[in-house]
Amino acid sequence: MAEKLHLTLACGDYESIRALKEGTVQPDGIELTVLTDMDSSTRHWRVSRFREFDVAEQSGSSYLLAKDRGEADDLTAIPVFLHRRFRHGFIFINANKGIREPKDLIGKTVGLKNWQATALLWIRGTLQDEYGVSFKDLEWRAEKEEDVPFDPPEGLRMERLPKGKRVEEMLAEGELDAVIHPDILSPLLDGDTRVARIFDDPKQVELDYFRRTGIFPIMHTTVIKQEIVDRHPWVPMNMMVAFEKSKQAAYRRMDNPRVVPLAFFRDSWEEQLELLGSDPWIYGLNDTNRHNFGTLARYSREQGMIKKEPDVDGLFHETVRGEEWKLARSRG
Image 1 (cartoon, rainbow, N blue to C red):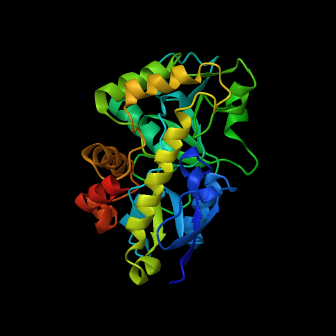
Image 2: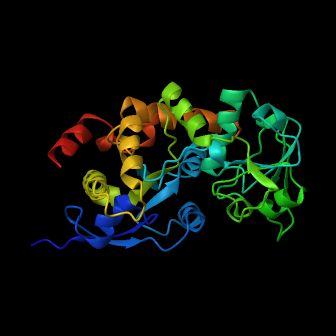
């Protein structure tokens, strides 16, 4: 029997990859070591700067930027989108600044983690598309350096905060008018009434957005070292099939209301099925995912990170773009 190929996979500790992590689903011909203990910022940094893992979940924004700069020739991506999230609920305001709607942000000082984080790229693009608020209308204060260096776009007014300054604390103290952030801010979680969301009912706003656009925003893609693909061209498809099997195992597990210790979990599960369909985390490059990732690419160009909008299909390995993946998925 041929020896299996040993690969490391670094990704978030998602229910969708549980079967891969536990070994109940194994990619054909591959023995995986699954690494899930690091936070996403650390993982993206290590992928973007040092290429530390054989297969990894990576920031969609950083991948687009690296491809545009010709710095990702040693990586190939597969359309496995492990992390998606609606982002209207991640615009936070100081409750004493008189901000009632997105238009009120114009002329304000807004904090963020860094410029190129995918979540923040989506939020800025959504503010522009949905509410007519351009990034050029705001003053920006960034907490951290970028994963991938880039040339700031014309019209960007952004300053790096002094070391040790945290945007959530500055927002609560009134040093910032608003913050956009990938995570729920700690003052809000702690019940600090000085901090609020700009939308009182973000879920309803996000559902309206989904009904109009069909977009459930893709945050991350999955990359494989090109040297592995060159030596073993079957790896992308076998990994795609394994990711799909693991996700389907997660769906079957979540279909049991006893799994999650939430009293009304089944109601939420059935609501998601009705509103988002049976597979909202769909993999592959169907029309919906092309539009989704293409919108992210458009935002990246409009916000000065990439010079040219790419052909979305060209961002992903050729064997998993269309018909071959549909056939493999149906067999899996």
